[in-house]
Image (cartoon, rainbow, N blue to C red):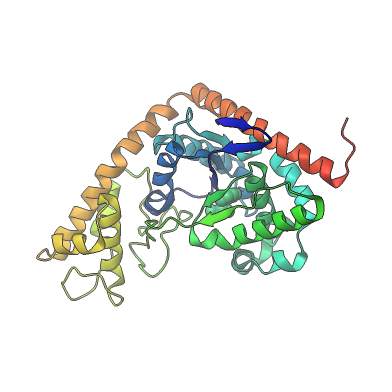
Length: 340
Ligand code: TRP
């Protein structure tokens, strides 16, 4: 985190914050749409990436699963190319300031605002037996994540934009009341953040929470599994590899192929102009296998050494904490808490 002091104004590089929840198993969709860009952003910006483990308990999760998912995701962030020397990578629960600031921000968030959140409504409908207060408060904790680091930009999926908007509202309300305290962040959906759909149901998103779903390719799947999933991907009954609205399966596979190879959808279409479906699906599968191979290998190296992983977590948390505590302290003081 480089900062240059300049009279009274602080000139700094843009700061980026994002996080992923350790629920389920990260997919090719998570990789292509988000994770693969995160490492590269660190060349021009100061980046912080977090495993949002505190967010993972808003829906029921077994302790063992939470533990394993969290370690796996942390290692995976590094395996996809986030360099812990250039970025700050950390576990959200290792920096206590997140929970503390969330409490403060609760008091500047209106009930009605939180109640309007689409994700809250969706999740409440899906699990009516567990509509807990944490689920309701989820976006406020997310606002705390972002505001603690004075982030300028928050790369997220489309579905999280509403939460970033709420974060802006909270930040502005706080700043208006107490004076400039938080940077008001902008949500960014990556342009090339291809939206990847399920291979078995190309009208719904490739989900990370259904471990048995043949429609989801997981970043850590073996080459054999990846190939099997692609070969069984749903297509349609005409036999022409073309992207269009009434061919969601083929369009999805073309989107995946173009994202994997960083080429346009048109170029991908041209490549398969005379291919049959079986050949096409095999080629997309092979492209995915090759792209994910180095990621899986890097991941496996990291997971061999728990002590090293723990050390990386400690270092990340320490760096994050320095920034987070400064903001938290500022917020406490502005509100009028006695600090000694
Ligand atoms: N809610 C985000 C998701 O489900 C994860 C997340 C938690 C997050 N805190 C964040 C994303 C802060 C961006 C910034 O994907």
